Image 1: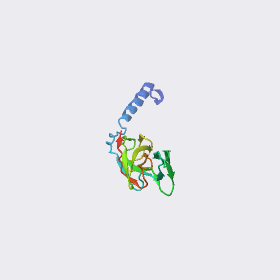
Image 2: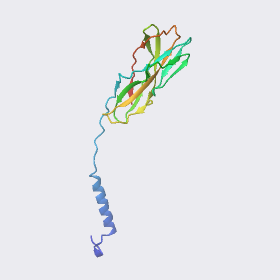
Image 3: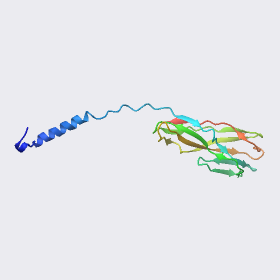
Image 4: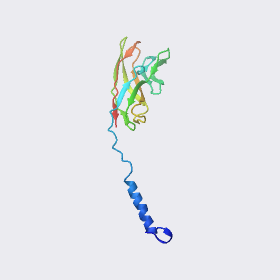
Length: 175
């Protein structure tokens, strides 16, 4: 296989390069299939429920909305008060495999009952991160999900002063 001066011929060099390339392909790392998906785990933070703070309806009522960024707004003749009452979006923790697409199923309105009589209607609203979102942290970590909502408030006679309470559920869809 040697030619003059100990040099390999061109064809023999190509043959050796192809041989090493093909053999090198047999020694590449082989990866097993990806682990099966884990179910999404959602837990509520009891220290931060959905809370609308203090407000007063007028003659016609309206809505009070708590946004997932922590701000609050109203429509109609609702007057928003500070008075030290906290308003917050609900906080949940979502644990899922990285790359899992998460969305919320539309939730029906919920009726809240007042301590002084009356009822309010709660509709779950926007979220932060906005839906749908893709989890990006490892399984051991969790993604914080903030959920806002909107209260439909009647006039002062229909919604007398007091504390209004109730519960709502969220349904998470793993895509």
